[in-house]
Every structure is written in structure tokens, then in C-alpha cells.
Length: 342
Image 1 (tube, rainbow, N blue to C red):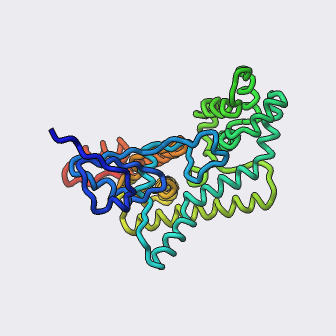
Image 2: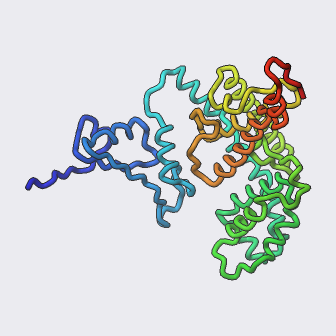
Image 3: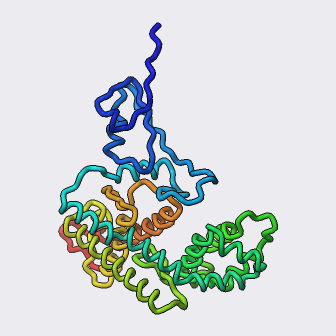
């Protein structure tokens, strides 16, 4: 009986040209799609990929640039496939950098960062007045979960929740005696409490969401912060409109899935507003498939945005599809008889 041959680990570059019966590939977030292709084509019979999703231990005092608490094997593989290591021409490099700098992914990240700084003092004051003890409030403000909690407060306010009243109610709901991270607990309570509008009246109000996705930062802040936020908002809206215009001109499959734009002026504006949300979602998460929303959802934030985008998609389709009464009248019309108009 012939024993199996064993081989030592090599890099993807050194593996080029080597073949073996079975290849085992360790995939990291920094890998390029070209390296992955080389590594995953070395095995004659089997090629197995192992995706590294573990985090550094407590001895690592500073975060690594590739650390992502929401990372999954699927999201890392998606990132690798989007990461090309091929050499670009000067023109291609400039175009790629310009696209990245003006993408909604970049602009939304800038907006979120500025909003967090602009509203920091406001959320700090709100937390200190929420019913927590001084020590508990200090722990919340210095927690790593303070950022997500702040973003959730902004999101709740964008959906017309009265957070000045709601947060103290959530604090009083249950004690924190055995809590490891009060900020994380409050974030979870706030997320569940604001998943739906508080009452039917609020459901009829339009949420303050930029391009239907990004919660608007409101409340008192410095003029410089307000100006910076308004500039990003304008750029985000312009980018979404440009992407929609390009998709309509080039008849992209994803925009055709929304139905033909209506001729009616009011309905057309409403349809375009919904279509911009889909365009913005695709740009924010790098969706390139023919399907409007794509398949992979990698983080909780994307899951929330995907739900909003799916709702916008369904509304856009409803605008372009005839009503039941229109279909009934059209089907009942005799051959050669003019269809009645509604």
C-alpha cells in the first residue's frame, strides 16, 4: 500500500505551477482574488478553503485594520473576490480611486463618522439624564458599544421616536446589577423597541433617511458640523441620482426589474425616489449582480438596509403595475373594443 505524500505549506505565489491531489487553502481578509484563484486550482481532485474569522486575543492592545466584529466566512470571501491585485493602468487607477472616493459607501461612512462626533455631547447628556447612576453612565459613555448605541439613537429619532422619553423607560425596564456592558444592553433594548413605529400616526410620517437608507443627524450641533453633514448629504443624493440615470440610459437589468418609469409626473418622481434607494444600496454594498438587491447579506447593518431597499423595490414595482381594476376592465373589453381608461 502506498502511503499518501505530504507537503509543506507554501504561499499562493509559490504554489503557482504546483499540482497536488488535495489542496488546503487558508483564506484571510487581505488575500486578492488572483491569489485565491491560484491556490484553489492546485488540487487535482479536491480544493478546500478555510476562512480565518478569528479575532486577536487580549494581548493585542490595538485593533488590526482588518478586524471586523461582524465578519463571517461569506463576507470575507466576498471581500476577497472584490479585491483585485492586478496591475492597473494610470487611467484605470485614477478612475478606480475617484469611484471609491465618491461612492456612497465612502460618503455614508464619512456621514456616520461626522454625525457621531456632532451628536456626541447630546447623547452623553441624554444618557446621564436617563436614570442611570453616575458610575453606570460613565461606563456606558466609555464602552466600545457607545458608538453603536449612538447610531441606534439617531436611527430611532429618524423614525420619529421620542428618544428623550423612550431611553429612560428602557433604563427603568430592568436593573443592570449583573450586566457586563450596559451600553450593549441598552443598544439591544433600543433596537427591539424601535423596530416598528411607536404608534399608527408615526407610521404615516416619512422617515428622515437620506436616499432611503442613512438616518439623518438632527438636533443641536456646531455650524461646522452641520455644514459638513449637509455637504455629504448633497453628494450622496447626487451620486444616487447619477447612478440611476446611468442605469436607465444603459438599460441595466436591475433597473428594468423595477418596471418602466411611469409617465405621470407625480408617480414618476415617486418612482425615481424609490429607484434611487435601490441604486444607493447597490453602491453602498458593492452589488454588481443583475438582481436589484443581490444575494449576500454580511452584517446586521446591511440586513437593515436590505429590508428598506426591498420595501422600496416592491413599492416601485407597485407603481408600474396596473391595478386590479385596470386589469379587470382590460380583460373584460370585447375584441376590437377600445379599452376604457381610468
